[in-house]
Image (cartoon, rainbow, N blue to C red; front, side, top):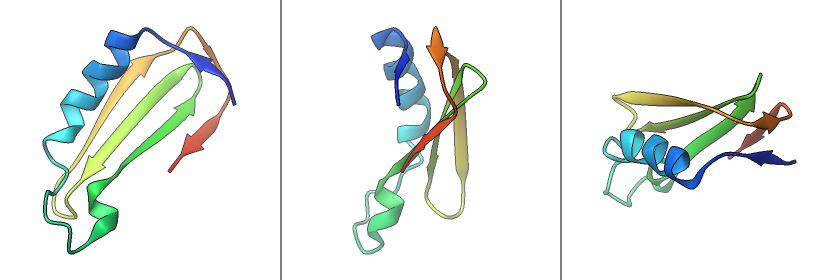
Length: 68
């Protein structure tokens, strides 16, 4: 998989979703984010199982992929 985007675009997307990710490590999956690439857009999703936030960012070039 290859995709390209500016570093600040990636950091901005992470900053938007990282606040909702639970700090409690009793449920480890909640401490992660999901990144998906589709149609030259990157979606970054974070959740605490009660609230889910997704940030979208444009990519210069990409293929449809997911990073879990």
